[in-house]
Every structure is written in C-alpha cells, then in structure tokens.
Image (tube, rainbow, N blue to C red; front, side, top):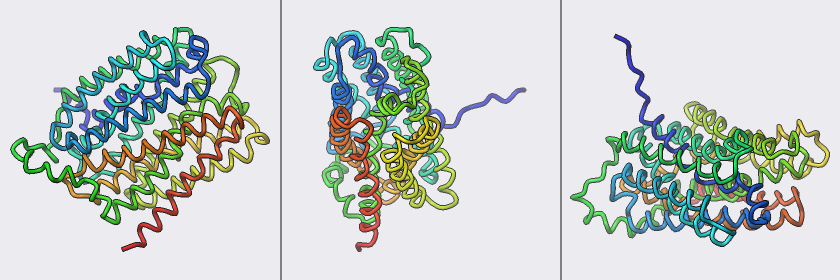
Length: 397
C-alpha cells in the first residue's frame, strides 16, 4: 500500500502564511494601474502602504493589550482575520475610487494582517517550540514570497486589469484560511479557557518583557531592521525603473524583476535558518543586518556607474539579506520572554516595528520624488541603529 505524503504543520502554516500575506503589497503591484486610473504618484503609493502599516499597528496593539493573542485559539484568529482581509482587499479592488477611499480599505486590510502574521508565528511556536529559529525562518520566507506574490501575479497577468490582480490575492488568502482551519492549534502553548481570567493581569504587564535584557536587545535589532525592510520593499519597483536595471519598458518587466528582488529574500531566510544550527540565531541576524547595510551603501554610491547586470546583483543580495535577519530576531525575542507572554510580546514588538516603518516609508517615498535613487540613504540609520543598539543592550546588565 502506497504511503500518502502528509505535509508537516510547519509547511502548512508557512504556505497559509504565504497566501495570507499576499494581501500586504497587493496595491503596490497595481501601482502602474493606479497611476493610470487614479493619477496616483509615488507618494500616493507610499500612502497606501502606510495605511496598511497603520492598520497592522492598530491590530497588533489590540491583540497585545487586549490579550487576544494569548486568550483565544490561534487558528481561529488566523482564519477569521484572513477571511476579513480577503473581503477588504476585494473591496479595495472594486469599490475604491481614489487614494482616500483606497487608503481606508488598505487600513482595514492591515488590521486583518495583524491576525495573520504574528499569529502565524505563534502557531509555529505551538508546533515547533524547540526549533523556533529554523521554523520561523520558513515562516518569514513565506511572508517574503507573499509580499512578492502580487508582483508575480502582475508579471504573469500583465494584460489583465489591475483589479483582477489584486483580487487574486484575496482568493489566496481564503485558501490560506481554509488550510489553518483544517490544521488547528499545536500541542504547545494551548489556550486554557479556565485560566483566562487569572491571566488578565499578565496581559496588562506585557511591556515588562522589555525589562529582560536579551528580549530588549533582540527588539532593538528588530526595530533597526524594520526601518529598512518595508521601505525598501516599497521602492523596489521605483529603483528598478529609474536606475536602468529594468529589462524593458513594460509593466511585466518591472514586475518580474521586483518579484525576483523581493522574493529572493525567501531564499535568504531559508539559508539563514539552516545556518542557525551552526552559528546560532544571533550571528545570522547581525550578519544579515550588516550585509544589507553594505548593499544599501553600495547601491547609493554606485547606481549611476555600475552596469545594469552588476546593479541587479547588488539588489538581489540586498533583497536576500534585508529580511533574513527578521526570523532570527523574532526567535531571539520568543526565547527570551516568558512562555505565557509569547503571543502578546511578539505582537507588541511587531506594533512598534511597524510604527517605525510608517516613518521610513513616508520619508523615502517623499524624498524619492526629489532625489531619485539617492533617497535610499534615508534607510541607512536602520542597520546602524540595529547593530549598535543590539551591542549596547547586550552589554548592560
């Protein structure tokens, strides 16, 4: 009798994360269509991304301070919010008529993502508590592919109206919700309804996690990483078109290269996850942050002199390293805080990190209209702050 292959829980959660987080940058993949339909500028596209970040922050704060991330079944939260995100994303595609109405619906998409990304991390911990670094690397790899997915959909369906491309992300999110519904929660970190009332005081003191030296150091590194990551992802299509990297002038060319530059981050996460078994999460995280900073400086100094091929290599290395530190900082955070606060602590860390992205996205997209690719200099404080801040935090008792 043939053996039927059954995917592991980590694989199921990761694929569901891939589909659910495809909602995140669905508007950015439609940037060219939005310019034609709404007359949207680079700043307007940045505003739509900021609206998602703002919604995500509101959602994670609600999860954290309300204690929902640790009081209710993680699978139920994921399913509910993935369905809600799919609905709001579809409304953005077909009902929004301008940047203002679009930003409101993107805000609601961002709020929904708060029940997908950090809850996905908790689901991973619930199934693989002893392999957090490697498991989270797979999860963030899927987040990265999910972020790049709309660009892939745009590249392969370049003749379709942008509304259909955005709607495809909604269908993926619904399928991800179905996968988690079938899987359920893992055997670890199970929510005990009888303890909900006795745990309430712990949710009110979730910020005490920052009193733990190792958690504080990991959070600082994560915050520096976040200053760079989402701003970089936002302007990748702009960097490709304005620096001469694009293979041609069609939307498909830019989208395909954008998918490659962002999507290669998945490979970076997986390689980093493998290396954690050899050198540990700390060295992987800090090395990734240093490499992305070096790529940033190289691009800023040489984008006018390097050939398109070499410049593409710089962008690909940057894309691989800019996100590979994320799962390792999250793993370091998860290991250093009390087990009963894992969900809430990761949620509040996400909330602060994504608040930071709103500033860097707004700044770099605004500067881009004035400076072009030179605006990437604004991202450099992220790697510097993350590396220096982490080292200083670790030294303090």
